[in-house]
Image (cartoon, rainbow, N blue to C red; front, side, top):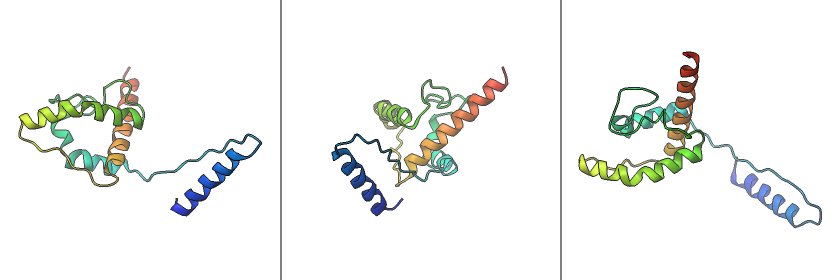
Length: 128
């Protein structure tokens, strides 16, 4: 969606909100994310060095496929934010650097984690 269309949608929404009749307008922006690109980010940023995913080999950090309630992007980002102080201590202890993300990489990583968790959950349900 280009910026002009987004601005027009916001102006329409503001105009509707100012009118005497209550109006409901839903605005949404689709973000281009790629779980495949997120898998590359997971490997390239060395997340896989400390974290397994959905029952993989045990590692230092938590298994990102089995942490409860990480079922939407906001929950994943909040968990990363809350985990940052522990992660920073562990990185310092091991002489590792904090990963630097380029534009779009956090969204791709989140998409990868969500799809990986969904696939792992479906596989576990099928084995029951």
